[in-house]
Image (cartoon, rainbow, N blue to C red; front, side, top):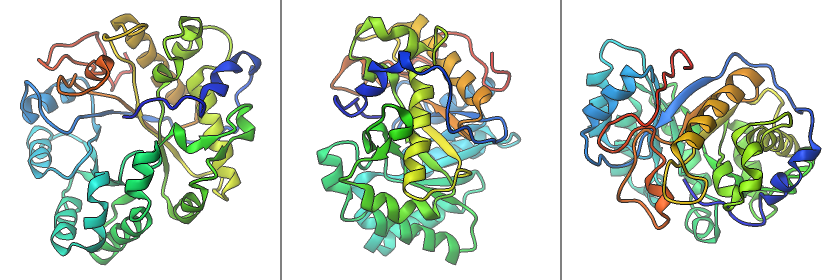
Amino acid sequence: MSYFVPGRHSVIIMHWLALTTSLFIVVVAEARIGVDIGLFPDALSYDEQLLRLRNHGVSLIKTFNLDPGFLDAVERVYANAPVEVTIAIPNDRLAAAVSDPGYQNVIVQALRRRTVRWIAISNEPFHDTASRAQTRPYLIAAYNQVRQLVSSNGLATKVIIPLSEASLANTYPPQNAIFDPEIVDLVQQFVPSLPAFSINVYPFFALGGNGALLDPALGRGPNPSILSNVLDAVRAALGKVGAPGSLPIIVGETGWPTAGGPLASIDNARQYVSHAVSVARASSKVQDLYLFEAFDESWKGPAETERHFGLFYNTGAEKFPFDIATGA
């Protein structure tokens, strides 16, 4: 998860009232709902965390590294239950993915796990100046290297690159959206071979504490919500780099904090989660949507809200009732 970048997404919000119809609809099967789980256990072990997810109907899980201990726990907890896991190569390991045989072996061992179906190459590589500088020299090479590892080992794992909203520009009206000119050359190199396009969307950060925009952020009222408009902008931008209209879209992260700042509350988080699930399942705009995140992470920062995105407290207590399987 990364912060909203002022000036890159605010136009969508400023003009949301002008939009009364949804655009760029792609017909897909009902979206699947998953949950992101953080890099490190906090108060609970991986087994304890995963058991809570399983008991709440979660069978689609996305994490942010290749931790074999986490994958062992998934296999234990979901031994007799369906589960699909997305693993990831962190931004600071892209160079190793390209040139380190030892790390490449770690990748292959993770890909061979029966629960692993997707692997993400980095996370939000174009979000800000620092991440662009860190990832640009290695991103495409790492993407191609992992695709080659998948193929040469006879695997079927799907390889994606999760972006943030900061990758977009000219997002109002949504049909005018494009990829940021600074990174469009890279996007054009990987989009044609993607099995799905993954993007992280956070209406909460886009608000900047402006309560007047809370209704469209939470999906209240008659007009398209911020989330819906962003997805339309993504579809338009993809079309401008030659992606087919049938390319699935995955929302790799979306969520709302329950504490730590203005507009962060349990009730708002509950409403946003309900809205995001509704958009995913009712609009045919996305293939999968992952709620960020499973558990609060007390070690995160610098903003206090970063510690409070969990559906559960870090102790494992549920913040509000939910069941992914039933949509309740």
